[in-house]
Amino acid sequence: MNEVIQTDRKNKLEYNKLHKRLRRNVGRAIDDFKMIEDGDKVMVCLSGGKDSYTMLEILLNLKASAPVNFELVAVNLDQKQPGFPEEILPNYLKSIDVPYHIIEEDTYSIVKDKVPEGKTTCALCSRLRRGIIYSWAQEHQCTKIALGHHREDIIETLFLNMFFGGKMKSMPPKLLSDDGKNTVIRPLAYCKESDIAKFAELKAFPIIPCNLCGSQENLQRKQIKLMLKSWENQFPGRIENIFRSISNVAPSHLMDRGLFPFADLTNDLQINRDEETLFDEPVIKQESIASFDQSSILNVKSLN
Picture 1 (tube, helix red, strand yellow):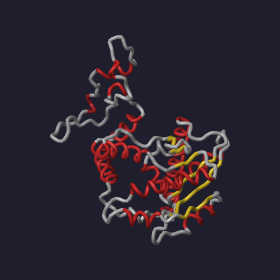
Picture 2 (tube, one colour):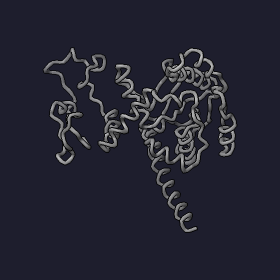
Picture 3 (cartoon, rainbow, N blue to C red):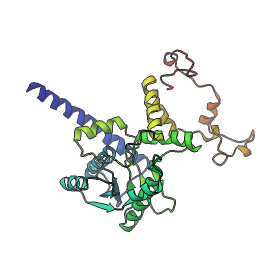
Picture 4 (spheres, helix red, strand yellow):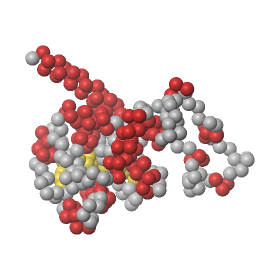
């Protein structure tokens, strides 16, 4: 009995700690990128996964004490996957008294028809979902579309684009759609996936797996995730440094001629003093340098 009480107390303390951290990180992201403003109607996209459940929970919590008034509507896209448990999300949303809508569109059949067996379905599935969600948001006067992508999603996308797309881009915390009619926000942008996973476990959210693509073990994103996990295990703090670097870009020290006027550079051109120091060799704390091996130039635990 005492062990049960101690476990319950420990779980409660851990839950409170996680909740505060997630709430703080979501609030900071919203403030930094002006994600939600007075009078907004926010479409909260729910997949039935840990990330979107957590996003809805934290947004509901923030809404209760926010200095601005905004509306939340939970929306799920039922893609008609065989065996999809249609009752789970409606039952959950009713239990927490949240306005919701279920969009029913058979994208599953389209994806299975168009994508050859064994090929990755994510690209087409994502494109179809995006079109449906954008249309629904416009029809129902939603001013923001909230997606549940977290810190690791953003980092993984950066490497996916570099390794397989030849581009240096990721998932921005706030994005205007190409047609200028929809604003997408990612309130979990500053949140760690491990925090979200533990929070979802403690909350016992009724998780719905994605059977359409969840069994595709060779997805490029999964390989990137494994690479990052290996890096973090070997060099703790590396993921945090990578994430920080996305917000600390020096265009004059890359090679995009559309982003920086390299052709116009002269001795008289004034440049930002912070960027000028980047010509110097990086200063690396001696205690951060580990042993040299053949697999890497320097094993550095931290570049701070």
